[in-house]
Length: 164
Image (cartoon, rainbow, N blue to C red; front, side, top):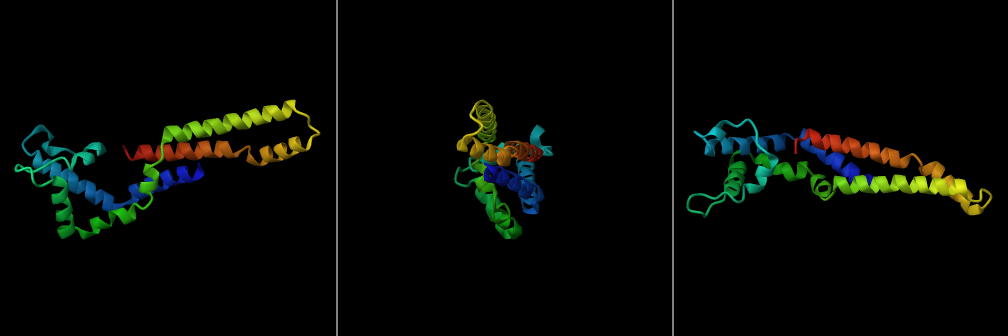
């Protein structure tokens, strides 16, 4: 769990700090404004990130050229540093496989399990070897679920700052 949460936090930090990503988004916004010139949407100051998924669907009038291909060729010719984006956002692929709801559920289950174990120890035979081993484990591990919950909340806040 800690690895997944760290992956999300790192990816958010990379995205926020990436000048290459900002350039890519600026080019996409500029292209959209050019295509929509003269319409209500022609002077947009931003766009929803989900619009990026539609770039491959937009084709030229003859239906042979995708807007995405034109943008990549233009970037390659005019702004080659933009092509470094995949290397700059090295943790985004791993972070994209994570799910906040699933991580929150897992942290919640871990907290419940620790509480159940604690209750079991209170009820159980305090003189047994198992009780002493479990008590030692609980003493060392008791604060970890709270740290995971805090780290997950921090990763979620970082994700929210991206405006996705």
